Length: 507
Image (cartoon, rainbow, N blue to C red; front, side):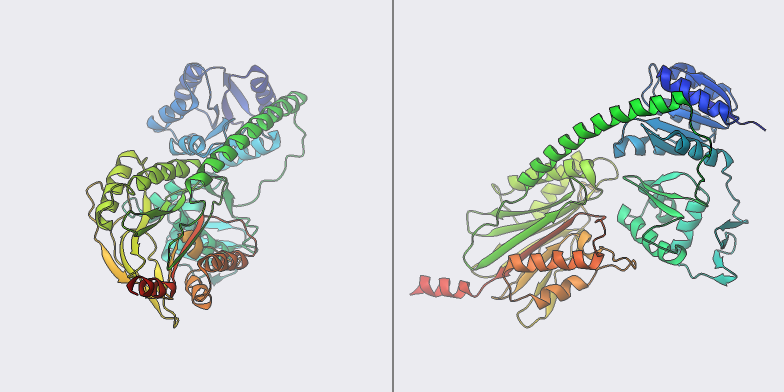
């Protein structure tokens, strides 16, 4: 039985090359050179696959995809896009596309992806799903390998079942979160990454080079029952010519995009403190590293007219350019607080109202805001959903700065409360983003509480040395693996010099 494919592409040369290649593989091909005609065919015809360009005249690919899904059709849709931006691809996937290929592409890869989508079937809940030497009993919620049960948590099994029933599809993290965790639970894409890491450790022979759960850069994950074999038949001459032309165009666009991203990264670096303020009796230092060219982590120091010092750390949910834009908006709002200081709860409330009006859907910001009076060591702080910072005393004891309210940007009317603590001479305050504690080693273990051990071991060192020790320990823990989240560390150390300053003032 021959499968019917609809190809909607406005580039004549590329359309001709695609038609030739799919026809040579036994497909019955219909085509459209604009979105309007493509939409008519998609809604009227019974196709086994739709190959859909995004940038089309008259009606774009997004609208076609939405209309097909609104009609209730489950025809596999494979999107072709020259755009490599995360938001463009996620939009297409959220509208119902099953997979995507970025131009320029290898025709053999495209055909393999198309074949996988066409032969894909969704198992029923009472079926046994097999992949490799695994058997997953969806009804009994059990996974077996060679007749022996593989222990999975309930969350790991639900995640694996979600992947298995959508094999071959590129699944965005947001979609996975809603399906496995539930839309009412406030978690981030890092929760998906952590669960994937533990799941890979149980089913992959080499978790660092996974076969089944594959990472889709900037999007999420794809589950492959088996790796697609390469097509032994070479592509047509027309397909090769088009691919070479598209490759040259894509390389030029990639160079331009890289230059723009580097300019954005330089602007973002200028938004962070170039140096900590010099304050008698207080030693400050900060470190920030984005896991991509730009990031969503942020820290800052504010100098108030009465001598107090504001210390801020924040983490925007998500990564890349969208998070960086929210971070820039937050930085401007925080800087404005230096001119009109209030108590920390009131300042965090003002930030929340400002962020709630500007934060895109599915974005929020965790933030910790502290104000320290160096001569007395009095510390006032408010926490908006951020990791609780901690104090390390000279004797090595640890005091967690707990308490707080919801992240910024979720509830405009949220209320926050101010907590208080005291830093004695020699105390170290450490603030950090979850890129520190949630850094994974190759075995899938988190760095987690080890950050406290590092600070305790280095508590007598200057703040800059403490910050350096933390990020070096994280780098050693991950063994050189690429970071999956932005990393930010801020240290404040109250020195014994405060006493000398006070005695000098009294004499």
